[in-house]
Length: 250
Ligand code: ADP
Ligand code: MG
Image (cartoon, rainbow, N blue to C red):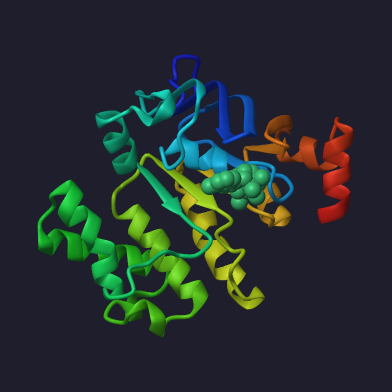
């Protein structure tokens, strides 16, 4: 990182309401390429909404938001910028969201074929390589329902990576998994972080957060209460609310 590195995400005074509910309050956030940011906070604090704003899945009402040098406008009026961002930003959800009627390989090749315009042979090779990378190269011809949750989530990860995103967003990627499958998904994410991917991760896996995060952000009722390197945030939280939250989850 150097002084001239442009942030890949730059959010200033972002405010988001659902009707009368003020969900995000004056959020300022800049994310540097290569950074791994973990977002923690109680249920309902606005973590999902925050990362969904970054790829335009949620509109916001006030503030500014730039992602990969494209400006997302308030009230969802973003047009081409939104298309660009959806192409360059990958997302992995709690509930996998695979296409049930497509094989694992076809799940992965669909967007590169349709959106990136790569040829079928190349898309297939990329899918095979990514499946190998997440450790399920032998599952390519199966359908999602034939896989375990941990395998499905690794397919979801491979599918996102097939678009060669510049930024990856994760919304509680292991929360729907049986405990014995959490490790295999976290391992794949750990590898990705090691390879230098820029990542924003909402998770309750505090051990993992401590290990991979460059920065941890604690959100309380739609505000960033505190943020810092994991050692600081976990071992010496400054804010009473952060201390309270951590004492409940650690
Ligand atoms: P978290 O991910 O931290 O649990 P969310 O971002 O999902 O929190 O939600 C923040 C707040 O916004 C909660 O009060 C939630 O009920 C509300 N909320 C989330 N999505 C919607 C929606 N589509 N419509 C109305 N309220 C919503
Ligand atoms: Mg959430």
